[in-house]
Amino acid sequence: MSENVQIDEAAPVPTFDVLEALDDAVLIDVRTAAEWDQTGVPDISSTGRSLWCVEWISGPQMAPNPAFLDEVLAHAEGVLPGRMFFICKSGARSASAAIAVAALAKHMGVSVHCTNVIEGYQGHPAAGPQSGWKARGLPCKPHGIGRGKT
Image: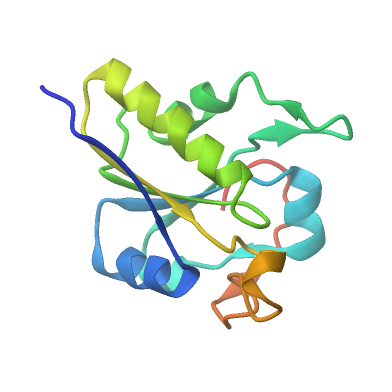
């Protein structure tokens, strides 16, 4: 299979719209477990799609998670979905995570479309106080279960 790897960006509301429309889409929250527990996570249960919580960086040292790609593959049961959205607090870490997964897909020879959710979950300072998944009124829920699929 020849790979077709795309990387782009989308704001939170269009991201939610695509998650509602596409069967082969997931949202990957790459924040830390502490962030998930403190601020909650996107609630995409109404879309019928999966939210995968996989730390890009971990712990108080904010060190790279060496198992990130393995954990993504474990959630995917070895088969990457065609459309993958990545979200963090403000859109920076998720951009790096999207690039890493796109590189993995290219190496595997599979087609994927990786999208960084700009503004992130809590908003980006440059985008203003009404930016981010939460401020835009998209569904959220408490996490409180540590790492894993919600």
